[in-house]
Length: 390
Image (tube, rainbow, N blue to C red; front, side, top):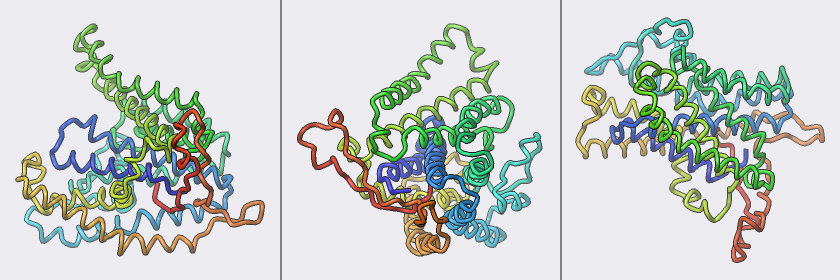
């Protein structure tokens, strides 16, 4: 997809939220931990845009999967195998009997039948989100190819509803209990089209997204009123229902936020999201997310048992080391490997031109009702092509 700086910034913000949570800077999972829901919505949008741009032909699958492998696998397996090698040398050795599940991106898979998966290092507990994304990347294009574009759209409400029900019964860190976020991102791809396009900026769409976002922000107050009115049963007797409702609220909230960012891409109001530092943070966000927890635990072996209550100096060192490693990883590992994507071009289109997930188009001008008269210079803003990871 074309690089949209604002979406890079959202990814960077989400990475910071997760790192802050694991540093003990905030204990409210609904705020900081919900960053994974933003990741899922972004992934659903970007992957579905790629799928829709290639008309769901079977020959599209090979380059698609090859490009996903080049983006996700190299540093994931490097970190995982590196940990297994050094684990016997650690003061606090970690159990690794569950390694086969982590090697195949099937973390927590036995939870589907209420079995307990073999133990593995808590340093990699956060990789359940990567497992969910890899499973989604495997299944979603297959649905598109086998059933067609219309069936893909019809599947979206089914996924949203089934995820809500699954959270009432199943482990919360599974694909089925989180695929409503992916599905809502896919819905954005159908609704919005290209970022900043007239289709994305239709008043009815923007109004609906703003209304939905405001309603989801108001939900906690409504839930509190429900508790006062009907008693503590809302939180004590029906905890799974409350959890599932809140998870749905967060997915819908990020659906509206990401949708509005897509609609206003290039707009002066979103200039802070085009800050180069924040956008670069989004570029290296995968490394930040993957490296931070193993590094925290290795630099502070009691990181988890002391509830992240390390000194400010040690916290600063952990944070600096994480960002430094993410930068080096991007420059010397991820970026060179991503150049290999050119060896896996998408098949020719019907017009005989090579298909690409980086169309060199310009974002169309903003409608006059969105911009003041003095902002003509923002009316035709180019978005640089990119092969960034969804």
